[in-house]
Amino acid sequence: MNAPASSRRLVRPCTWVYLGLVLLTLVTWAVGTMGLSGLWLSLFVLLLALLKGGLLGDWFMGLREVRGPWRWVVMIWLLLPGALIATAFIMSYRG
Image 1 (cartoon, helix red, strand yellow):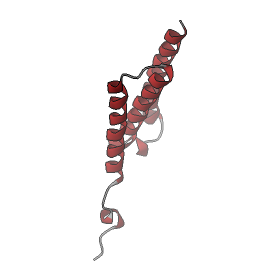
Image 2 (cartoon, rainbow, N blue to C red):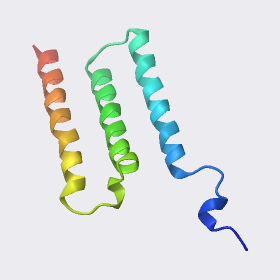
Image 3 (cartoon, rainbow, N blue to C red):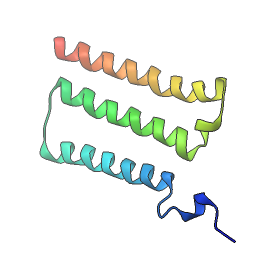
Image 4 (cartoon, rainbow, N blue to C red):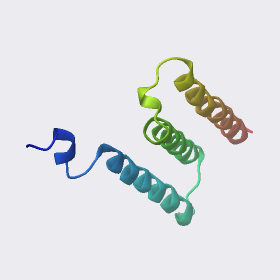
């Protein structure tokens, strides 16, 4: 008997997502330890955090298979505070 196609893969897709999350975390850490600052860099780090949250919701909470409001609740939960934080960053750099 042949093994199913999914079991023949050496690395599962969720492992790639996990490694991507680790890489994004290392990028965020590197930016912080270098002492870099500025509006665009702050917004970039915020974008990385929102991207990581979206990946966690989709892959590790199982929301990529879900249709309807449950998936949107998590996305809105990420985007609303992200937009408010971005607005606060932008307003503080203007003043």
